Image 1 (tube, one colour):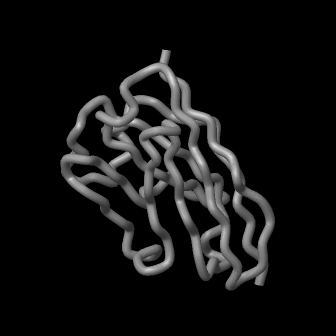
Image 2 (cartoon, rainbow, N blue to C red; image 1 turned 135 degrees about the horizontal axis):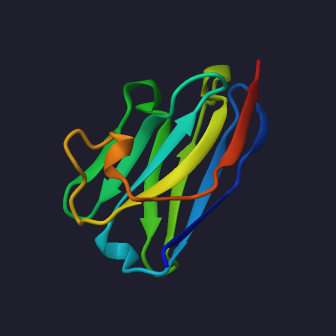
Length: 126
């Protein structure tokens, strides 16, 4: 059984940083495409970033240059380093796994991911 558990969210002020973590278990973590998604209040879920050993990294335009997705294969953990946070980054953040070494085209489509964590809330105040 695949399990994904996010942590690291919380309240911050604009301009500050946070690092989200996603601990993965139950599968060959290093062979999967992994992603971060978010759902702002009252809006649909949207892709933030993806990472795969086969296809590299992809970022949504609003986070390019501010967010960095990485993974530590030894620890089976996915990370999202978020710098210069803005109020519009406020959302529930989810990590997800796609059962393929390749991220889909388009890579940020949530429908192509099979397993999801429970989410961690990020709130950015101005």
